[in-house]
Length: 112
Image (cartoon, rainbow, N blue to C red; front, side, top):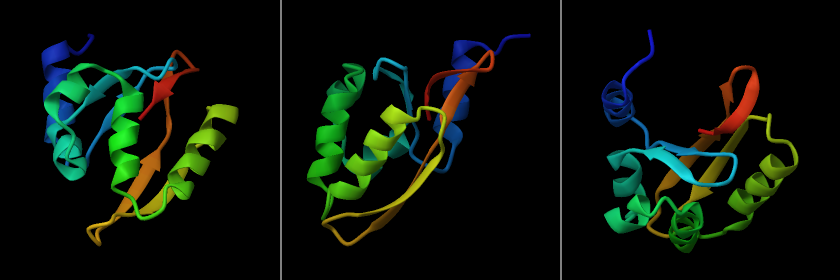
């Protein structure tokens, strides 16, 4: 039995981590409030579903953008890989970033 959109949304919101789900085209398919709070992302940016806007905001808060940009380039070349990165924020916090392919019917259908 398929899970309803409402239940799926509630599951994403209940998770302890900030979640961002992207389509293969780079469109935001889902996110949660913990992500928005962690990275100070205004609601209108998430509603626009523009991943580039979110990325710009995240990059602006990092002490060095190279680790994240390197991981994103690697994922573009090899979409089936899992990445684990440590990101240092300008406010002193350290964020562990885990990303893996979203599989749909044995094919990569985006990223989580």
